[in-house]
Length: 273
Ligand SMILES: [Zn+2]
Ligand SMILES: [Zn+2]
Image 1: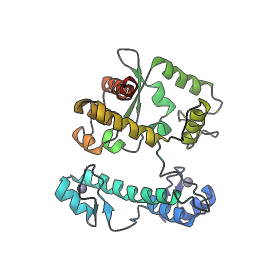
Image 2: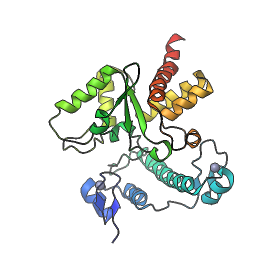
Image 3: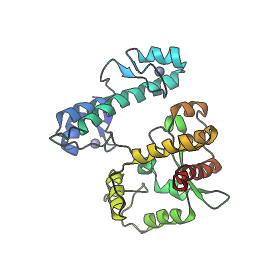
């Protein structure tokens, strides 16, 4: 019997549905169906949305052929885009389900944005390199679009970097991850903790990582020249078309550092208005 890697806990499971029900308490039938499809790589429907940004065709029943003919992808890119399209279709359905406030409630959060931070390891933090002006740049290997973008780079000021290393040094649990749960496994609750901190400092609304990312992209789009916009998109591992141009090359430390300045410039332009 083949075994599959659970997308919720990274454990291997032979009977995926049983694992999801018993280990994760997944009792919503629709959620169970969708997550099993995702884990087993099963197609939801023959018609899929083309995942290439800016593609005007949209949905296609022969996506592989469409990718070959219109986007002239190579084998590796085609496989990646097919995987993205497949995942996107399921995430879309999970999100739609979430909006109905289903009962029984959903237990997975695959449809919610997990930033690079969730996969950042303590080892990667310790290996940060220093840019000429003292900023520390951390390279994170595992993240959603790593196949396109290589390692994600996170630039931190010296003070921010100290917060991180102090947190890792002083915690009582041993973990490979920079942010971890009580037993040392990956902290899957980053979003709710972020929201708690957001409320704690008295800010309004209920933001998620995707909203922050999208607003950054929007500001960058209207306020930065094209070249700098591309650097920023690259830094945020955001645009696959940009990714194809820079295919496989890792972002350099100095580029990661200046991308952080660009992000701040895009947002700060708001304040001066
Ligand atoms: Zn699991
Ligand atoms: Zn297309």
